[in-house]
Structure formats: structure tokens, C-alpha cells
Image (cartoon, rainbow, N blue to C red; front, side, top):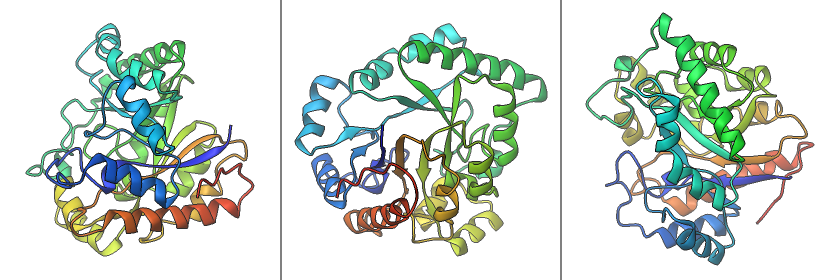
Length: 300
């Protein structure tokens, strides 16, 4: 399989703040993303949630479904209950030919609450880590039987946020659990995306490429802002427009890496024109990928 570039619809509309980009039709999002060169999209809240509607819609724009976020609550419920809860989402991804499921533990998360600073995010208690890792491994093993690999998404405002959190989790879960490396969230949390990409190069099954504007990040950290306040202030942007060294991150990918590299940048579309930023992100990553010994499929 080749490596392909996809994009998340957060550039056009925001799942945590649906009022951002509420006026932008899904068809505009798909049209502009394909025109920028992207081969696929991750799910957003405006997308149909059944393959009978979604497949012909994406085919109209020559697009694939990359994957879609799933909110796990394994700290609260059993693996059996999680398996029951995931069925509709699983069926959609499977029917659409996806190979990974983007998953994050959201019990007590704060990233969707504009009034809660990130310092109040949940933390796994010492005695809770082993049980959570076991449940996550069992859930990932079930997804494997259904043809999907779990791509764990470390995320600001959740129990797995920092470099330390990622290492703790990956040390205790089984090989069934893959890692989604998100350059923006890791940098926000004080981590080094290039170092983690090197350390977990064999465990990375999905890559989110998000850039940050350093001056805004420093203000957000010093002021202990909420995640959404930072988004509204413009902390995130597309690759090539911020401080992340994407060349260094891509250098760590194994030459046999196949799957998706996804541009993802939560921005206010009224302040950051989506088509222009989608083009910027594609051009920057495509140029870097072409310089490396990776099997990159350029759809532009």
C-alpha cells in the first residue's frame, strides 16, 4: 500500500464548537479538500454516518474515508460494553474500507469545555493504569478481528496527553494497540514529535500533522487557557505555518510505512480561509514526502 495524504474537516468546521464553520456546506469542504490535492477525509460531524449515503458522496469527489474519531469510555465501562457501543461506528469504517480507528479515552476530558483550563484535565491514578491498559488491549484485539487497527490518539485535555503519558501507556498495552502520533498535541504538551516518532516508529499506525504558532502557544501555557480558547486564539495551523519540524518527524517513518498522513488544524474558518490553508498544508507535506524514500501517492 502507498502512503496517502488526507485531511480532517476541522479546517472547515469544528466538532467541539459546531458554531465554527456552521455555515460551510459539507460539499464545499470536500470540493476544496480534493482541489488542494488530498486523497481522503476523516469524519466530521457534518458527514453522513451510513455507508449508503457516504460512499457515493465521497466518490463524487474522488475521495476515500481515512478514518473517524471514536470516544472511548473504558475507565467507566467494561470491554463488552465498549464493544457494544462501537458497533455503528465500526460498521461504517469497515464498510468504507478503513484500516484504522482513531480512538481516545474521553472519560472526564476537558478539551471540549471552554470554561475549564487544561491544568484540570483528568489523570490516571497509579492503580488505574494497569486496568485501563488491559481493557484497551482487549478492545484493540477485538477491533483486529474486525479488520481495523486501533490508533490511540493522545490529546490535550485527556488522560493521555504528555510524553510521559504516552510512554506509560505504550509500555503496558499489548501489540494490538497502535499509536496515532499527533505533532500538534504533543508539542502543546511539551513533547518532542521527532523523538517520539523515532522511539515508536514501529508502533505508529496513523499520523496527524498539526502545526503551532509559538507565540500563541506560550501565552496559552502561561495563562493556563482552556483548549478551546487556545483554538480560537489561533494556536494551531497547518504544516509549514508554525514551529513544528515536519521534515524531522517524517524522517523517522519507516520506508515501508503505508497508510495515511493527515493534515489537521483546528482554526476558526472566519479567520483562516479553509481552501487556502488546505492548499498550504498539502504543498508543504507533499514536498517533504517527495524528498524521502517513502511510497507517497500524490493525488494532485
